[in-house]
Length: 577
Image (cartoon, rainbow, N blue to C red; front, side):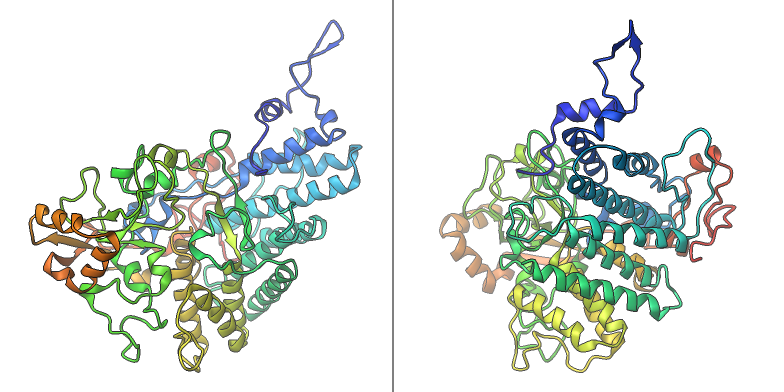
């Protein structure tokens, strides 16, 4: 059963959990639950923990790809138009709920094994929430107990290093307390476990070692990151976790061995809240949302050829032809990118076998793609359009592939280049890339640290495309200005050079497989493609202060002890301390 098939009745009861029980003629108010009772009843305590999950699990973000070179969009971020009010990641109501559990559960009478597991979950999510806040803002007020009226209700921002120290303390507590769960166990149902906490610790320490937090590249941080990611990989492997052999179905085959940290959804009790699928599908076969995650020409070109070599590499066994850009590419390309003339079997009422997706100008009746492409990743082709709006596709926030990539990056930074190669080779082998005569799967031999680092970031770009990673990878590595400023993103416009009737007659005359075969050698008889600019008004203009966003003025007005972040109006708080 999915962990987030929440008992709505219990959650409604818990919404009033902190209400005081009024006495009327000395009778208990039966409309509320006394807080004291919660920690004596495993079901009520579990419902409280389920609320913590519900409020803190990450989910699909259909706008995040636009804050990078993956897609169009992200205008204020990409065009230098952010203000102090643009980002507001202030999760102290969630922190308070977590602190309530940690401050009170030991006083209850539920079994110790249940207490330990729930405390482990609470420590995990407190670490996770603080990490999300400092990733945006740097140091924030550090509150690790339930505040009362007798406490200081106007705390200052703690140093980033102090918050990070508490995050690692909490995640280590989670690692010690959470149960050991194997990949094949029925208990692997979406709850966080020891392996989840170890993998998240590896991610957090890698971020802290990265240039956003570590512009001087202090090597001790990379060593800590390496140690954590190595331990996470080794432990997860011992529990049966690893790369799942069916890449496109990582999201469809729930709780497979690659899934480490996941938000689970099920309609109608808990549909996916951001309508990822509805926004990502073409509107002609969707409903209620449109325009999300439309791949840019830049991400299309980023995928290598099927021998793993970049499209401009003259040593590749395959010649890249811009007119036939989709031929002989990394197999992950076809599971990520939908292009003009691709098989994409979506339908309003469900899967349509053999359906071809056209994106040429005039082919789409409703809200045509702005880039010439659609994203295929994590889209259930069997789902009807109305069901896409209420999707139950799980969001896998961290999968085993990322553990390997985090380990590769950290290993490379501490001089273990061979170990970095091993992780990339494993990913490319799973993807179906050809091994080549040297069994390097297209990777250049003898890379130095900088070259390997570039190869790892490139592998992250294609392996984790549209999974809420690219924006964060660019930001934590401080790459935006050098990579993008003064440039614009692009799409591909396909012009039909025969009549629509001629094209549709051709389509009617053969099977989908035969048509795709025909277009692989005769595409230019029917279409003329041209690169187009999708940033129509402005060049990209990422500003250096965006590596640590401002604290929203509303919080500073309520608490004058809060200092604004350096780089923003009146800012004096140094997020690098």
